[in-house]
Length: 120
Figure 1 (cartoon, rainbow, N blue to C red):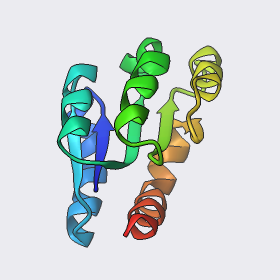
Figure 2 (figure 1 turned 120 degrees about the vertical axis):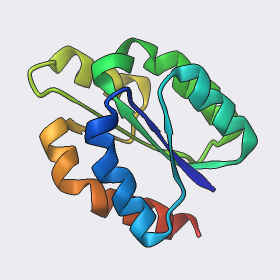
Figure 3 (figure 1 turned 180 degrees about the vertical axis):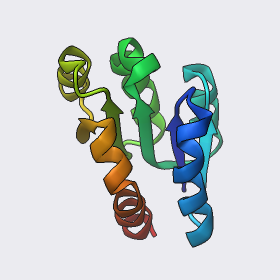
């Protein structure tokens, strides 16, 4: 089981990936929806983290595609708190948790721990 972090912000994501690496949790970065889909076909996905800043419009189709390979996948989406439309749309698309970027930044380690430890 892997985790996929769909983001184009490699600076912000480095903090999250370093936490995952410290604990031995397999979190892989995908910078496009095609890359995320390709990774999901290689092995089951326990956790999908989506940066709504760039990928909000892709959520419904992306979740449909990824859930065919990993139906039990936990999906966390985050974005700017001022972009209420993207946050609402992510909830409606079926994300398990939707939060602001600040909330995600504060809770990232706990989210990773909860998802990876429950997947094993």
